[in-house]
Image 1 (tube, rainbow, N blue to C red):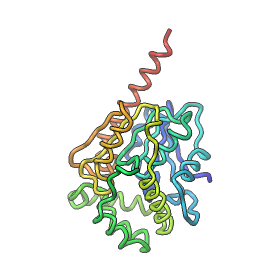
Image 2 (image 1 turned 180 degrees about the horizontal axis):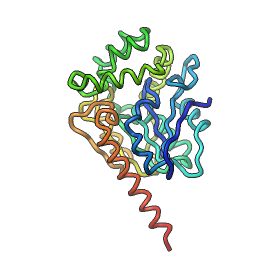
Image 3 (image 1 turned 90 degrees about the vertical axis):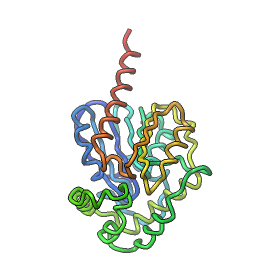
Image 4 (image 1 turned 180 degrees about the vertical axis):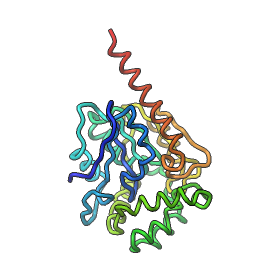
Length: 265
């Protein structure tokens, strides 16, 4: 299935994959990265401007959609947020020729040792499933930010709500993505097979996927770099974009520089 995608900038290719129910709008604050990189954003199956077939979905299918959609003469620096991290890790395992590096934001390898979505969050989500996208977003989106952030930043929060609702994810598609993610968390991925540079970023105030998932992920795929950020929630790249953009750019520049040194006679 071919997805909606958009590309800005030029240079080494970067691929941004959003999380559950989200689409390319959630990377709006990453536009400055296009000054030095060729940044491609995709809307996964069921979200944004991509097709929204009836479920069920699987993580493997959603990753295959990305393979079918994006092309590059070079492998990508892949960034995956939350459920997008499941897709990014799947690409690194199944299509390693496509992936030069990984940045994994607020995600999990799944499996027996994963830390599940907190019950209070899951119950809040389930109470609102079936409502309109606007009603659902207004009732639950604050949980993806750190506690109190939405109340302390009402204008910024409203901006993100409006962006989410420009091309909303229908309830049925959200549920299909959620089920695919739940299956991934139960089954898990063989992340030890990943053999590219990895940066893991997790907010310690994450109310969606607890930060212990980031710790466990880093322990399973050394020598990955782990950044646990105090006071930030699930949406690190939206809540503190300047922090994420700086970490990402520094990581990629280091990889590019190391590659250049290896190519020099």
